[in-house]
Length: 496
Image 1: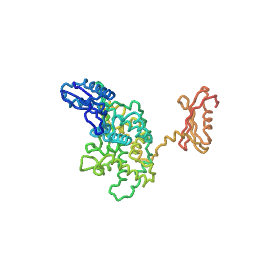
Image 2 (image 1 turned 90 degrees about the vertical axis):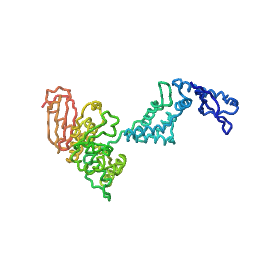
Image 3 (image 1 turned 135 degrees about the horizontal axis):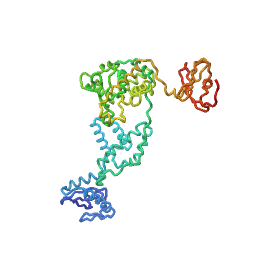
Image 4 (image 1 turned 120 degrees about the vertical axis):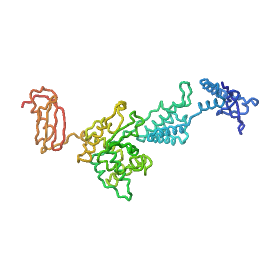
């Protein structure tokens, strides 16, 4: 077992002595530095022992910690250098910045480029707040982290994403460095116990109407001297996204020839393939409307399906250039204000909105086609999934957008403005129901308002309906295609 002694080892130029803890193992000694110094009067000149009672007390406490740590290990065959290395590693503060970069590198090696970028943005922002790229774990106290989070409060998404990333790095470090079974804690602080991470803002719905979608793809491209302009790239990739059930640009960029099998794209969604047991696998049939674009961008020289790699080195730069091209069409060809221009996500959201509002697909059907995670994700690892329902829904969406002149239903305004005033010249239809059965129906002109229609219906109600019972009335303005439903109490029996 190693032995310890508080001693001085080096005399400084100012006359003071630096205090060390001497470690002896198998008759060999090494010195562990402390942050204490003593004046010459507090040093035994012959033995170099420290006489200052306060310094001795602090160093003795540290020695007790060393002894406790070594008692939990089998150090019989260790030499003195191994003992010192063990004590240094178990007591020194840990560099958070270095650990965060190691964590990011692990994500990159695991193929999680997008997650790695988010984590890098998070710890870079934290380092800028701290004013150093050598941030230590001991600096991450509750007040410090709360002040940092407060600087993010005006952001919409980063105020939640950045703290979540930093917390995850911290939690992994606790697992790597702290031995709770043996009481060896190198990271002694944990600010996240008391910190409440704010929620990100609900994103604004980015979908556009079918009419706006048609106008975008029909718009002439802005003039350019390039063979392939950014606006052309933006339009074509937006078409790919829309025609492949909202596929992400990172997946388009990463597609390989092996992913295309008999006209069907078979791939794993990059965003969630590492977090799902089914690896976010999906098969999407290429619709006929998209085949010319597939041929246009095919890469004949590499393993990749498309030639986007030849000019754009990363999926992020590919996405940025596509969004720039989309914005150019919006501003120069459609005269859309800069803050209202579309992006790739516009067409992903539009696909989902048309599928739900115009094709009447359920949320689960939409999620399945867009390869979202669902409650049946475990079962999907056991069953060979038939993706043809997703293909059929995709065809319905494209049919609605590109092969009809139908307008998108304004469901929001319909709920806010159910019925407008009507005139005596308009054709009005009214029905009266009791227990779900239609008892009375009228259709005529000459009504000035809803009350007149209700009175006409109530006057024709059969006398067999109990008084004070509730009947349902539906009124439709045939000329405006508007409908209003209401309940009406039967307060008296009206004779025909």
